[in-house]
Picture: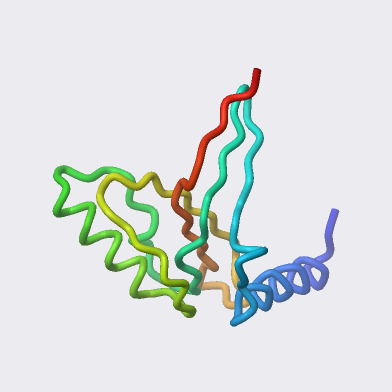
Length: 116
């Protein structure tokens, strides 16, 4: 079990990783799940007290595109990743050093490889 001090040190190091240090080598998230390997490309990283990033239901393409614009515009760094309404999005979040904020990372599905 982590102490509160250890937890905040971990969160701070995680946030520092993304502050201007996101390069081509470390902006891919890879999941090996069941019979597939998924690669996700990070496109947005930010801290926020808002909860719009939690939205998962969209009633039309325009609503989804507006959501993508919002989460892209919130990013603390510009990664040049283009998004469209066909993209599948992965959202990761963790606590921040501020009790009223969350640290959020968004990535889009780049590839899926089936394993034999």
